[in-house]
Length: 163
Image (cartoon, rainbow, N blue to C red):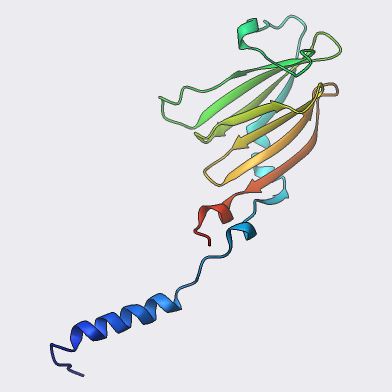
């Protein structure tokens, strides 16, 4: 069908309005959440935990991040982000009883890196980013050398627009 040239701009406008109204409308911002799922075993080879011997070389005090009460510490050795990835991060964790220490390594992670925070005097929260929208969240018991919590987190819902 051929339309007169003076009608074409109006048809284009109407077509644009129809297409725009049929597009999905963004959800409410308060409905966007981080979704958690069981730990994905494919990442198990990228999270290494090693007990350290008493003879390990302790980092300088300036490199240590102490717990609130100062009874335990960790020290992070991060990657050089000026070099191409993938990147690795190493965390030395000093725990009680005195002299007990562990090395936690995150291998081939994204440039968002690894976040580490003391929860209390024995529990450590570790978040390893594998990309822009995916991480592994861990809670590590520094006294027993075990993970109390290990799940995958997906931030995909937070990436889109919302109202």
